Image (cartoon, rainbow, N blue to C red):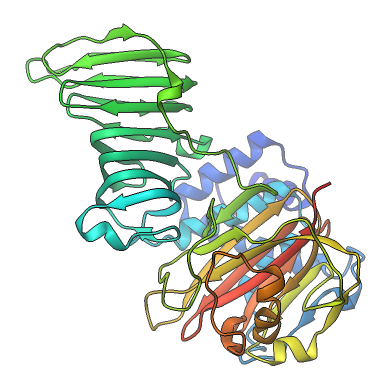
Length: 446
């Protein structure tokens, strides 16, 4: 597709106006992946669309507020790109963040530990816990179970004793033990090697069990392709395996045999976090509450999201930072809470989610992402003083927080966008000397 053509202009317009169908969005994604210049043109088009939309969508000027903070005047094209998330259709929203994550991908880390139960790690892995990021390499679990999310969107549940090697976000090698993988559409093609075969996902959920005698693959949903290792043939044997089928390959044999299908032998990763329908970009969902969110604990390139308290009915008024749809540039420290204070009334019923971002480098690093909730966002707590004041009421009982008087727990010239329907939160955060943290309050489930 040629840039600056009527065809591409029509496609850009359809995407930004919310008229594009799924086929058009998929075509746009393919073209953007192949053409860097086209990506720049698309982002520039989004800039223009967002600036024009601000004048005509019927949003009051009070809906777009700037917190005081350094660099306030430097609200360039990324501010406009993020602001469109609150006003454009869900399709273009997904394309924008797909483009941003393609341009901002970080190669150092390829996965995050999202859950752990009774996990005992081997050797250098002993310090790994929920929220830890993983690089390529061997993961050795002596006992217990863990869940891992790869950058490709693949979710893996592993049971000890197991030895699993992360090669990259699209491939791993199970040397020993059991794992199950839940592969979303964007992760199709994810491959797990075993000592005597490779299992290639074709859009599915499957389990693998490897011991000293054989490799077994159980397909829970969809299809996988099993490719048998062969030293005697140039073309290895391949076989499609479908739902509710188990195939076993003995180490000493050269062909697969059918054995009883038994999905109960595997721990399978959950579909999603309660209350969250979708996350995009650099956000990683923790299935269980972490031991701590103190600065310096998780220094990597992801924004961590987990649920704190649920079904809270306010017995006293609660001071919060943001309550209305719009784009906010959140400043630093105490100003977050003092200059933009709103109050939730007694009787309001809420669930609380926590977001945390802290990098391993002293150089400021940016992370972008978005969260779609299944209920409306009631408020966001973004200031250090308000964060400390709400730890006792809203915080997770098993999680350690920084001291309540620590003011730099809030955001530092960072962007938060609450969509017009109040269900999507869009983030564009940069972190340097302090950790970025906010609480998101949504309407409690019935």
